[in-house]
Structure formats: C-alpha cells, structure tokens
Length: 69
Image (tube, rainbow, N blue to C red; front, top):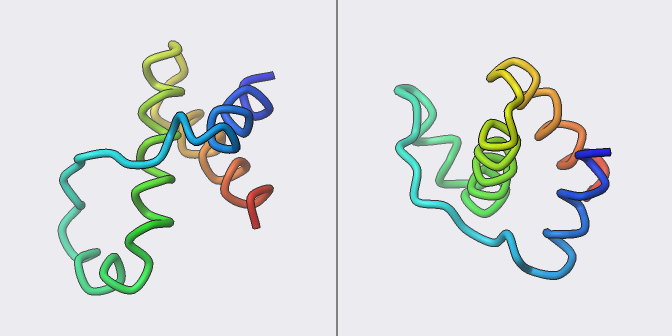
C-alpha cells in the first residue's frame, strides 16, 4: 500500500524536505507549520510521481500525515 511505503520513507528520513511554491493565501499559516507543510508537499509529490491523480495524492498525503500524528 502506498501509504505504508511513504511512511517507511519518512521514518527512514528519505523524505524530509521539498522546495515547493506555496499556494496563494497560505503563507501566514505555512510559517507556523512549515515542517508539516513541507512533509505534506513532499509526500504528495511522491504519490503524483507514482501515478496517482492530484486528488488521490491529497488524500494519500493527508492519510500519511494523520498516521504520523
């Protein structure tokens, strides 16, 4: 399952940061939660690269972040 694979990457610290542009209007919130946002974006990008749609990737990244706590 992709979520378990992504969690494995995160726990092995193979996913730690991404250089992504923030959507308009999220800059203030992103400053408070920068590490979490970067992890979400990195996980989302990996799932898109794996062939999942943007919608599916949002759901996958949300599930990964929820399981990370």
